[in-house]
Each structure stands twice: as C-alpha cells, then as structure tokens.
Amino acid sequence: MLHRKPILAVKGRGRDQPDGMPSALNEGRATMVLTNLLSSLPDASVSEITEALLCARGVRLERIVSQGQVSPPGYWYDQDEAEWVIVLNGSARLAIAGERDDRLLREGDAIFLPARCRHRVTWTDPLVPTVWLALFIDAALAPKLADQTIRK
Image (tube, rainbow, N blue to C red; front, side, top):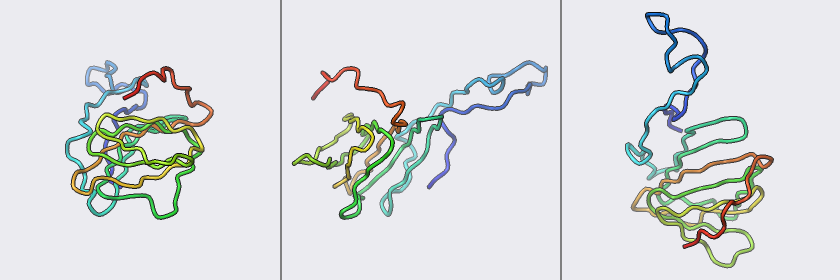
C-alpha cells in the first residue's frame, strides 16, 4: 500500500508560529489539504491499490485503484461495516448476493451496501484504471438512505 498524506489532518495543540500566535495547524483544528483523487494514480496493473484518506472513530474513507482485478473465485465480502462507494473513473461490475444480475458501475455511479451485504467484484476495466472512493461506516452509525428516489 502506498502512503500518502491524508486529506484531513489534525495536529497537536501548541504554538508553532515564530510570533507565538496559533496557526491553523494547531489548537486541535483540522487542516484542509487539497488533493486531486484522479491525478498521480498508482500503477494498479499488477495489484489493486488501497489508500486510506481519512480515518475517524466509526468511519474510514479510502481511494481504491483497480485495473483488471476481481474478487477471488468464491470469495464474498461480508463486512461488519456499511459501505458507500462511488466510481470516479473507469468501470466495474459488482455482484450482490441474492441478485441474479451483476450491477455495472460507471463513472459517477454510487451504491450503498449495508453491513453484512455480501458482495464481490466480478470485473474491473483492464485497460483503464477504475478509481473507487469508498466510505466505510461502523454499522451502529450507518445511516438510512435519505432519498431513495435518486435513480438512473
């Protein structure tokens, strides 16, 4: 896994300016770091790359870059966490247990997977990097979908 600076970082308390004045990097305030999630993509042609972008109690945000990778034969994700995922670049197919057909996810497509929703990746584009943004949410914190009328 590659190590990158997180999008959101919190520094410790203290005064780090020469004049003794608090800076935006201290006093426990969050510092915003501008990041483009589609630039400088890691090479995922050999293996999928997962990068943690933000971690906090009960939530984790990851950028996942795939290029031709799929879930191992017979393997199903069966997570304690809920997951909301959006495809930012490329495309993929996702199988969900109990559904007859795979779901094709293209750029801009998002899906919410409740905790314990068994699913697997059955295809990612082998020619173009598929960039996923995945938000994992502790099941106790997982929201209900606010508006289920947003459809294709």
